[in-house]
Image (cartoon, rainbow, N blue to C red; front, side):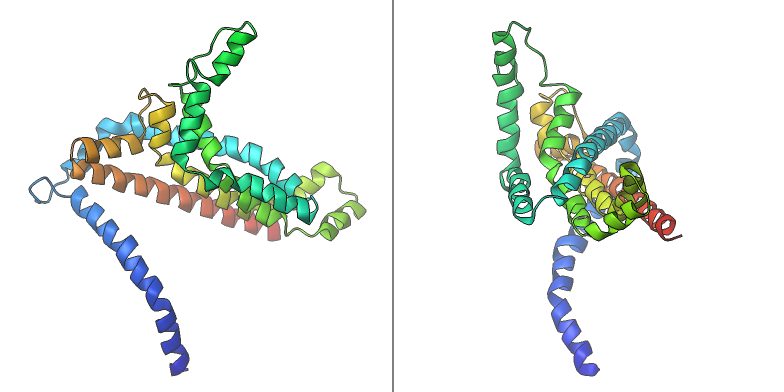
Length: 274
């Protein structure tokens, strides 16, 4: 037993070291700057002054919720039909889904800037067919679209992973017991896929609420989210204290959101097995 305990400690040592270096220490540094002034003295002014950014926090959360909901609406049926395909076709679809994720977010965002801008490909097409060009860049719709496009693979993959494990025999048994398509969806497929849905929501909401590059480029500088303000405070103004305070509050918002989603997932499991 002592040998096993020692072996576990040895195996777990790299993870503990990684957690200390790249999780705990950065969090301590963020907390230090959030609760100190430029001279290093303790202060709560950085936190108190965040009330000036209330609308930006609100917009960041609302944009992220919109992007997450749209991603879920698109990804859920796509993941289901993908999980019902032949294994060879599933592998091909997996590559196609992951292909955008293999590219740089900068390249993807710049590509959509060229498509959606005033003289871009989309407006050129609209003009060619006799329609007026549309103003897309610099609108909330463009920013939300950029979030959905960049992060939807992270919604599809966990849902597909869970759905692909649903045995066809379970659905066949439900049909034998008189369940129709709608009944199978609400009684079997949806409850069994909840873990994948919760994971997908987390993986889309978290990067969306903290994004800054998408909002900068597709928002054309007209839409500011929390990530934009943090970058501006740290890089442009060298104001590490306010930037750290914003980061700390954003982290709390993310943790609360994840806790609520975990609670929802727990309630769903209890309902499923009640």
